Length: 150
Image (cartoon, rainbow, N blue to C red; front, side, top):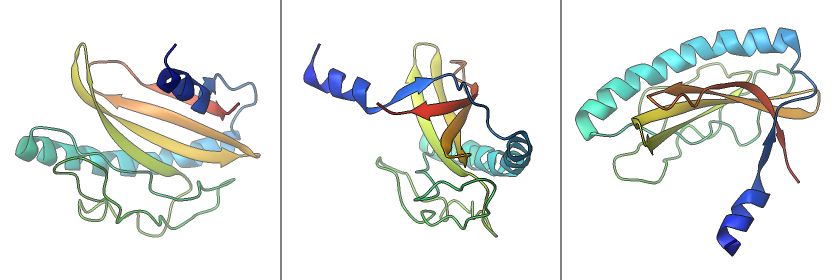
């Protein structure tokens, strides 16, 4: 196994969560995500039409919001690597008033075609959880999982 592959495998282990995200928090952040995902989908339609690829947005918060705390996104002006990518703010996705979760957006090119994934992050009861919503042909969506590190 190459050192790069081995290092990549060690960096992040994802396991189905044994402990569940708080049900009230889950309801709150999923309701919040409806508006964020809608805004991103609008951006993607325009961006792909103009640039031939999907927009990518870095994670919105340096520190992932915890236990339902509404936190102002502090990374909305950062730009993802790649030609034609601009910040959340430049795309008009402002997350005004703060959010209970952090978000990021990644384009992918897979065997079935091109798409993008919206990832939502939250900390609940000391554990970090994430879910992904796939907008493309690969079927990469998954429900809340706990991020487990070695």
